[in-house]
Every structure is written in structure tokens, then in C-alpha cells.
Length: 195
Image 1 (cartoon, one colour):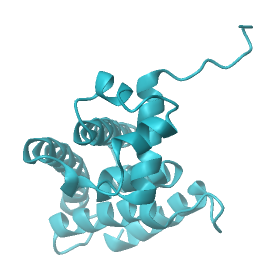
Image 2 (tube, rainbow, N blue to C red):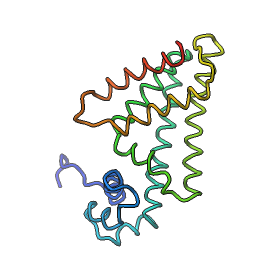
Image 3 (tube, helix red, strand yellow):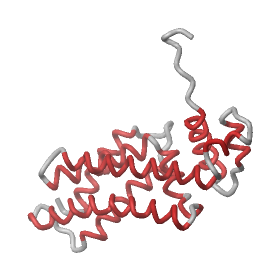
């Protein structure tokens, strides 16, 4: 193999990509382990070498994705001390990420009901941490007089819901780029909080 030849993704990566595509197309319950392993170019038994079950594979995808988004929103807020800039950056980064990774984001946000109670609780805890980051920015904006919203908690949830929903409708061949959608949602978010 030459140095310029791209390296073949490892088995776990191939399974993850195949699972995202299959879950996005057929839903969790409509997808079989055979669908996933075949799309990954592996035997049906190969999935069980890396994951105990289809549910565990979905949990791994959801956990990785949500943990990554938590770090993204924390990093967005860390770039400034100004709540207006923080909220704008956070929403822009969050929305861009949900547009760029729309297929995976759609799966990990809309297939949570398929997770076991324990796994769902783990994901909901990370989602709660994401909500706390947003709520803290909105609370500080209200306290400083930069924002005028009657209910910071509800506004935070609405902002996150808008961003998550981008993964449902965004298409790579659509009318807008991820950057255009992100910039527009930044403006919408700042209007929502009365900045």
C-alpha cells in the first residue's frame, strides 16, 4: 500500500457508519443486524464481535455523539465572556454541527426510545448537561440586562429544540449551506432572547 492510499476504516467505524445509514433509512426497529453488517462489508456475526447487540451499537453512537456535542457547546461558550456573543456562537456551532452531521444527528436524537432504560438515562444526563450550558448563558444574559425573556429555562429548551430539528429537515443538496443555516439561526436565537 502506498503512503497516499487512504486507509480502510476499521471494523467498528464501518459498523457505525452502516448503522447510522440503516437506522436513518429504516428506523431502529426496521433494521436488522444483518442489514448493518452487510452494509459494512462484514458477516452478520461480525457485529457481535464489537457490540453485544444492535441496541448497544445505537447507545454507543448516541453516547459518542452527545458527548461530542456537549464539548462543542462548552467550547463555544469558552471563547467569550459576553452572554450575547456566547449564545450566538453556541447556537451557530450547534446548528452547523446538526446540519453537517444531519444523518447521524437525526438517528441519535430521534431513536432514543429504542434504548434500554439505563442507556436512555445516560444519554438524558448528557442532554441535561447540554441544557445547563445553554440555560447558564441565557440566565447570565437576563441578569446582565442583555436578554429579556420571561422564562430562561423554556427559552433554552426552545433554542436546543430548534437546533436539533435541523437534523430532521437538512439535506446536503438543499437550498442552504450549513453555514447559512447556522448564521440565520444565530439571528433567530438572539431575537428569541430579546438581545
